[in-house]
Structure formats: C-alpha cells, structure tokens
Length: 76
Image 1: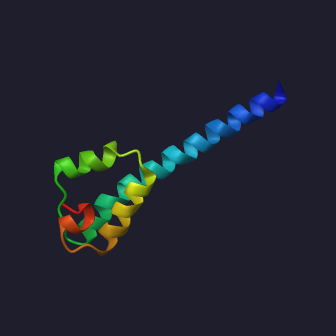
Image 2: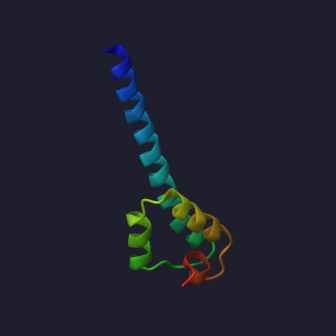
Image 3: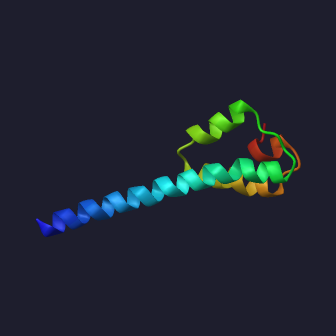
C-alpha cells in the first residue's frame, strides 16, 4: 500500500512539474516577442496557450529570443 501511495504521489508531482513548465514557457514566448518589438496576434497567443507539445513551445521560445519578425517565431 505504501509503495502504491508513493508511486501515485510521485506521478502527481511529475505532472505538476510538467504543467508548471508548460505554463512558464507559454508565458515567456509573448514576453520575448515584446522585448524584440514584435506584436503577436490574438490567434498567436491562442496557439501558444493551446499547445501541449513542450518541444514545440521550446522551439518558439528560442525563436522568439532572436526574432526580428513574427514569421521568425512561427515560420509562417
């Protein structure tokens, strides 16, 4: 019973960390864009918020850090 409880708590903790990481990276993309003087549309912000793929969010974040144009972030 104790092992099952530990596994549940560990899984819950991992999911919480994952949710927190997604939340933080989602917040960072518009901030980087703003610092670069790039205005994101409402659609762009919705796209970021809807994305569940951490690797994609990380790619957008990295692009936003160096972007000169909106298309440099999203590639379209």
